[in-house]
Amino acid sequence: MDNTASLELPVHLLRPIVTKFNMIADSSNWNRFLSPPAESLGEGLLSEGQKEAIAFCTIIEDHTPRYIEDYRRRFPIDAPSGIERSLANRELFHFLVRWGLEEDRHAQALSMYQIQSGIARNLEEMEEELIRENIKDFDLGFSEPVQVFTYTFLQEKATQIYYQSLARVVREPTLKMLLLNLARDESRHFSFFADILDAFIAHHGPRILPLVVDVAVHYRMPLCSTLPDYARRAVRMAREAPGYSRKKPLELLAGHLAGWSKKMPDWQKEITDAVEEILQKNNLLPRTRHI
Image (cartoon, rainbow, N blue to C red; front, side, top):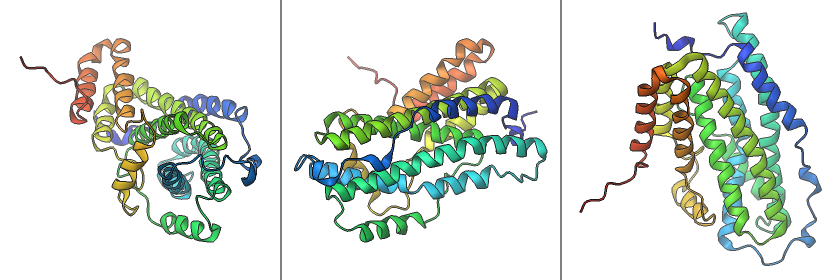
C-alpha cells in the first residue's frame, strides 16, 4: 500500500545522523565576534557588485527565524500522531537548534561585515530593512518530510557553491575568510541533508522518488516570491561569482539518486526514470547535435 502519510524516518535511523552532525559541528566552530576591526579591512577592494551580493546574502541568511519556525511547525514535539513521532521530532530538534545557531551566525556575521566595510552606512537602517523581510511569511510549498529535506539539500549546496565561488574572486581578505567559513558550515549542513535523503531512500525505497522529483522540478531559492526585485538581484549576484550555477545542485541531486540504482537493482528503472525527469525538466540533458 502506497501510504505517503507514513513516509517518515523512525528515531533509530534519525538519531545516528543527528549525532554525527553535532559531533562534527562541536569541533568546527568559529567566532563571528572576533572579526578584524573596520580599519584593518582592505580599503577599496570590494566592487559595487560584490557589495550588493553581500547585502543580498545577508537578507537570505537573516530569514533564519522563519526557517526555524517552519521546521518546528512541521516537526512538532507534541505531535498528535503519537509518542514515536514525537521522539523522532525531538531528535531532529537536536539538529535544528545547532543548524539555526549556525545560520543565525551567518546572518549576524554578514551584517557586522556590512557595517565594518561600509557596505551599510547605518546599522538602524540595515536592521529595519532586514526585519521588514523577516516578518514576511515563509513557506517551502512542499508538505512531505522528504520534500522538506530534499529542498534543503538543494538550498544548502547552492549556498555552499555560491560562497566558494565568490570567495575565489574577492580580493578583500576579511571577506574572503568569512565566505570560506560560511561555505564550510554550509558543506556540513549539506552532508546532513544528504545523509537524511539516503536514509529515506534506504528505508522507503522508490516510494519517495515522485516526491523528490516534484521538489527538483519546482525548486526555487528562498524568498524568491517575497523579496522585492528578487530576479534582478539574483542575476547580479550570480554574475559576481564565476562558476556558480543555480542548476548545479540539481545535477548533484540527480547524480546522488543515480548512485542508488546500483544499490537497489530491483528499482533501477524507477530510479533512472526519476533521474532523467529531473535532468530533462531542468534542461540539464546534453543536447543532440544534428548534422
